Length: 170
Image (tube, rainbow, N blue to C red; front, side, top):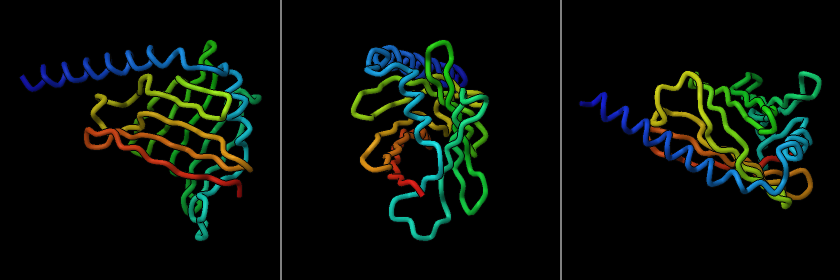
């Protein structure tokens, strides 16, 4: 009975997630290619606004003849996690390589000219079910003068928890 209930919850969660993607798919005011170019503009080192300790920073770099953008989180000089951005048949994807050992794939679902973009959960590898801990969404807002707001939500202990970080260029 518990296995059937868990399967039903997983099926319901996947259906809800797919419905959410379908609803948001029309919110692209910029093309996926234009958003990818905007993400490429992040190339370089970023730190948390107001951080004086300097233990944490994010490096954005391009690879694979500029067809892939790598977001590398570094804490005390060690790589903590990665997010890889790339195009897939006209869609912009972000694959997050999480310290929990799973790899959620997020798809661009919203963008506008003012500098806000949002990725929503598409699917994942090494994830038993959607109730397990994983990154569930990701958003960027371009602010003035080399400042960005990076917002994400994580499924943690069965609940979606948002988190934001204001970044400035190092």
